[in-house]
Length: 223
Image 1 (cartoon, rainbow, N blue to C red):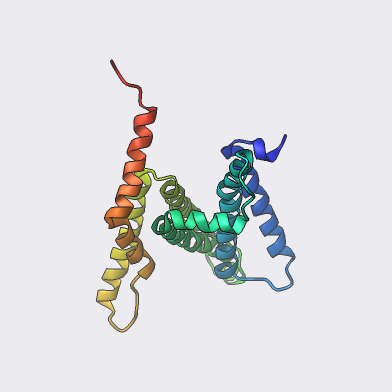
Image 2: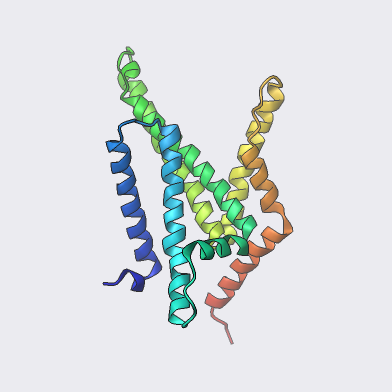
């Protein structure tokens, strides 16, 4: 079956599965082993780029071709996508930073659970179990951040509220920590920036109005 004729879900599954496997093989076979704080963000944003090109830019190119329009370079279409809703693109990028942070913590906890230091502790099994549990928790947190990013891109109202809650919580916690320790910079500037963007009237109208329009289309009218 032709990939260009697949629906969005099939394309998304194939693109992300192939991207994840390719990334894992690439990192595993690399001569220099990168720490999670480098390889996880690279993997997150590489997958995001693949999704952008294959799930958003490619359909536009195919639609233009089907309509008999002159061929447009993929880079030009990518720039058009960003220019159409730059604030929303920036918000999605900020949410993906949250994904990469949480996923990095999850991988780090999992690696430490079987590390030499933990194995040398007298209560190694208990400490290892807690670290694995923390890894699972951070994986779930990364999934929540990812859901907010995808929902924002699709302009869903629940994603706006979820993103506001996540970033508001992160900004509040780091703000309290900053008040307790003036000698260190602890503020989460990414979360603060995201909260400001989310509260902008333009962004709120873009996300919430589009979500209301989608609901009205799918809601049957009672006569």
